[in-house]
Amino acid sequence: MRLIIRNAVALLCGSLLGSSCMAEASHGAGEAPRGDSPGAVDPSTEDESEAPTVDEPTSTSPSPSASEVRPNPTLLPSAQGQNAETEPSPQGAGAETPLPTSGAVEPQIPAVSGECPEFRSGTITFAGLGGIQLVVGPKAAAATAPMVFYWHGTGSSASEFTRLAGAVRDGVESEGGILVSFQGTTGGDALSGTSIFGRGDIDLVDQLVACGVRDHNIDARRIFTTGCSAGGLFATNLAMLRSEYIAAAAPNSGGLTFPQEFQSSFTPALMTVHGAPGRDRVVVDFSTTSATADRAFRGRGGFVINCNHGGGHCGGGGLAPDIWEFFGAHPYGVEPAPSPWASSGLPSGFSSECQVFE
Image (cartoon, rainbow, N blue to C red; front, side, top):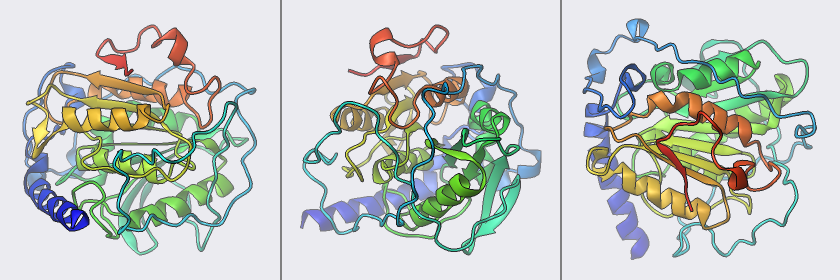
């Protein structure tokens, strides 16, 4: 009965978010000063070819040192998605799973299964799904490059990252990495309470990760995810359902709408970005969903940063440089665990809107 009620609520929320989510979403959060609530944009009138981009400073934070970078692990059989009919634990975060012991933890990368795309910047169709945008930097000489999955909000498009995550895009490209942004979905259950992305998309993520590690010198320890609104919710779920290789997540107006299990004992680092309570609201209050995710990740010993920019929905584009710095400092299994910032605090110059969540 609990499962039936939960699914009914998820489908209702998906319907509501699908009709109204991006009515308040920012198409230019990076265009307004931090803390300002961006104006509404009708996505149906948006011309992607003319969509403004924001020049955001690329983080100068260094790549992991040679002592931190490990050879890529042996590729494993493709991980299977969690059974959609499995009822989450009451704590909602796989609390019964033993936590990892001290020392570095290695990611587990799925094996390549089928064809791989050609990694070059542009829009591709992969595994039958069209509209996938890639930003690809020159292939690195060794397996040091990052990979980031960006997920857009309801009514928006795959190009959304140009406005809300410009510094992340620039950082990925400059280091020879790959940024992936889906336009549509292969379907599946309503992981986050929306139907914008679903469980079926995780199979494509597995294959793209495996191909990137094998073919484009992606560092298996530097795979991250971020996104806005429905995409921010999905990014949080992806980090949990693929905790075997996602190193860190930074949802913008995302978090958790209902309990979710972690795939493994590893807990990715988490940086939640949201607006003020009551202002960052579309069906759900995203300051609340962000706090729910914070508790789930921190409750397992993960490192969590909470950033309240004080503005409206998806108004955290100005924090993109901080997100890129956060990703750079949190490769998979970073030492000392759970974060080099756990004892020293946030680095100098990091946004004052962010606080370590305890």
